[in-house]
Length: 203
Image (cartoon, one colour):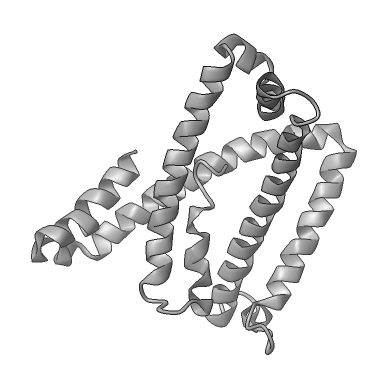
């Protein structure tokens, strides 16, 4: 899923960011660059450590398998710990995204306004954060209990990846269409408003 989503989390924190007009956007662009480099290095590294056939044979636990090939026990167990930390980070990112989107929609009265209320102390959308955190725990319990649910989650994850790819492509096209009158203003605007968003949508 993170091949397609997660890099834009900084955008949803714009209400809590200094220089909110520019910093979240710069952070999102920087995230895309870092993730692009990171994923490329990971894929190249995987295939540089073990043959492709072995990588496919251990696709369910590729990271721990590769760690075991590179370092002796017990050091290879650190990879399992790193995976746990990454799951925590992924969960936090999705909670931030969901709670902040619900906050914006609640503030605009598109969903119940309770979602649009902020904590007086922390200035964060507490109701949405706790609600979606609770839903995540319930789903996780169901996932652990039922293997059929686990299989369903694999299908859902694949579908979610495709969904986000379509969502971002549609957003890029909509941005170009909405700001189409600004494209001819300068070469920079033509690049940032026309060429790059449409190229991203095509990719």
